[in-house]
Length: 310
Length: 310
Image (cartoon, rainbow over all chains, first blue to last red):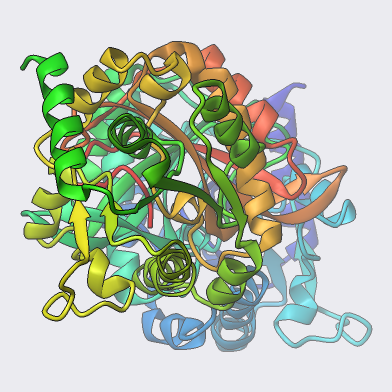
């Protein structure tokens, strides 16, 4: 595929579709939403309103870092603190489907719907990629229907339109476009990070305390495995606990799983063989996090596992 | 240490202590209780009544195999089916301490106490080793007090006596004694297997269905890792579940952990570096067990983890 041609076509299409209207998009800092933001900004300039919604589920320093990265490209991104809303919606929820639903509902119905209203936007730019659509069709992911998710009946939604410039690409294609767009390596080569963010790496209830544990473990894994060139690597906090010994006393401690996979397009994946020294170092650092006394390495390919745990 | 001398001394001590009385012991097939059984039988012959109590928590074919092994050494072992009693006691119990307590109570108060009464035994042979005593003192294991556990007040227990021939040895010493006694390699070199058996490898409730999963995973791990010479290797079934894909459909599947450690005496341990091919083969076989879609490898040393999970 000629990616320069792809970019020109998408920029033209977005410009023609939006005309002199207002478009809105949510930026997570992942490669999909970043590419959409740049394409949209190229097409629309100030007619595009881009928001970074802090849902309390992001990694260490991530909201500020993403906003700063786009500021350097002269793309203004408004940071919206919605942490309390998400944490309240997640309190007491342990079922993975309900958890994802609570995040989706809070995101679209509570937070994003209000932004659409405030900005007067009639066009929603969204970073849907081909794999999302395929997995929705296959019943692996839930349906993405943004208009109904923000409370707009698609039947009556004359004047509202969802624009999905990446819907024919897979992850590898999106990265090519990111490079062509001149996005910095930290975005173009950024490992995939799911929309529901650290909540997909917490089995069981999502609380501030548990987010803090998985956030610290994630920082360790990302630091130790940055040079591997693997497709994705992550830390997962389980809900189960296991017996252990700390300072000579019995401790019923937390369990953290490290997952590091190779994949081309996230449709299938295999666990990466890591040097034993690396695994030992990960274990040593992760079990220094308070209350964590087990560190496990995930050996499972996709299928039968998915990449994430929730 | 001169282990032949140790054996002679223990056999003499047991004979002198028991005199013409009746002694009883429970054999699990582990090296500790096997050595005690042989020492006791050498000292007492028919005055020692040895029972193998099937608690529903044993590995594939284990009860029959242990009885047959001792029959070949002309040591009669009575197999007692107590599976229903243990499964009933464990129903609904998820807390690790309560789980161990339910097994201990069922074993001593319900099953073993009745055998003591039936046999008229006044002497109880027990395979306590030094590490058990040290960990009890350190508060890592619960107190072992057999007499009170079978409902006999030690204060009033004139005539009852617990004999612990191995209480000055650690695991490596017990194995030396086993070799000196001419026990077959499958016992002398047998990897440690805890008293509460597969229940220590099930996080959460112990049910027949979950025992079946961990029993099948254990058979795979023991087959694949038999040649490693590692101190201990096991499969653990977690209570948490993770998302996966099976035959194109979403599956919320079970998680099995493989643990393989090096240790001299179980006081400390390190995870064994296994060849990647071995780990991959373990994962492939274990995720073929119905409903299991994740296989993890435990990287953690003891401390901060214990060897078992419960």
